[in-house]
Structures are given as structure tokens and as C-alpha cells.
Image (cartoon, rainbow, N blue to C red; front, side, top):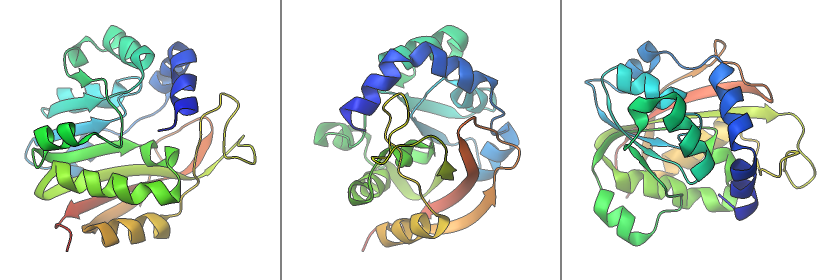
Length: 209
């Protein structure tokens, strides 16, 4: 995530957290479908904390990653169960963090997160996801194929960068990184104010060559 995007989350964190809490989100049944057996999950981009809270209440062991102190503050305020489970860090992760967390998660969940990275930067993200997952671990990735209100540089009115992604593009990148697609669906029950065409992909980590 670039500095301008992070600055936008810091400046507008309270407003964005409030908006995110009003959106229809993924149900606990969908999380259980993506991550069987009450797995240990890394939530990449805690945001408002609502998805994090759903997973905790569904019985998952969850650790969150959130670079915005403002978003973390409001997540802990409205969802006290996430307090003490959020680490202030951002991708790409430093070597020390990768070494500490390597192969320790059964699953990774991220919503819109990869949209903050340009195509040239995403291979490193997929690689680091693989480093964090145990063999056979799951990646639950959610993204939008369109987004309103972006300028020529791909930034919204707040200054956040978004890269519009296609299903085929994500699938190709993940397969090259060592992930195998298990299933995908369109999130017709999930609503966001500026993103449209939300997709969900569930992958299994098989390891890189």
C-alpha cells in the first residue's frame, strides 16, 4: 500500500469505518465454507473490523493486520472482541515478520486489499501469502471488477489508489504463484458504495515450483 493511500485511511478512518459497518458483508456460513475446521486465519486489512468480528464469533482463531491506526482504533471501539488481535503492519512484509509467521496460518482473508497494488507489485504479495500459509492452506480473496470515481491515476477523491482487476487476471496470477482455484462466486448479497461486480475466489496453496 502506498503512502498516499494510507494517509487517506488515516484522515478518513472514522467515516470509512462507519460506512463499512453499514454494508452487507460475508456471512459466517461463507467463511466456514472457505475455511473448514475452525482454522487459524490472517485477516489482511482489518478495516472496520466487521469481517474480523464475524469470523471470531464463528469460532475461528483470527489475527488481523491493519496499517491504519485510525481504522484499528474504530475497529476495536465497535468490535471489542478484536482488541489485542490486530498487528499494525502492512504488505509487503519485512523479512523478520515473514520469518516469524512463516507457514503458521491455515487461511488468509482479504477484501479489496489487492486492489491497492499495481500489477507489477502483486506477484510479491501472492508470494508472501504463500510463505505465510501452511501447505493446503486457503486464500479467500475478494475484489471488484469495476469501481466508480477514479481519476486517470486510479485514485479516488480521498487519494486512495485502486487497480481494477478481472477474474481472469487474478486467476492467472494466483496459479502462477502456486495457488489452485477451488471455487468462485459473485457476491450478489454483498454491497459496497463505490465498487461493483464483487467477486470471491477461494484458492488452495500448493507451493511454488
